Amino acid sequence: MFDLVSVNPMIQTMDRSMGLATQRMGLIAANLANIDTPGYRTQDFSFTAALKNEIAKLDGNQMPITQTHPKHFPIQASQGLPPTTDPVRPNWERNDGNDVSLDRENAALARTQQTYQFSASFAQQELRKIYQLIREGVAH
Image: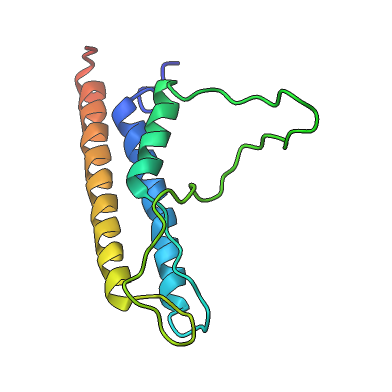
């Protein structure tokens, strides 16, 4: 049977976008939870770079990586966080070494929530199109 959802590039892209947004909101929540922890450093990743990487995986444009020598580190499919490509450079740091900024984290959280909502909306529109095609029995 043909699966209309899993082969739809828009739904796949929006799914990856929502997954990354969820991961980023988790990091932001951790940053906010540690706002009073001495020595805590802000953690984040570049959402744009991570999404480009995920889209490249979908398109098959990502270069395959193989272990070419037994002494090389083993290659593992990581389900962890995307690599940090844009290190957070805080404007200030407290005397105890903590660099979490409430304003920065709140702004990042708002942007990330907005990204999640847009992605969910686009995915929902695409699913409505598929539902409409099924109801009408018309294939394009």
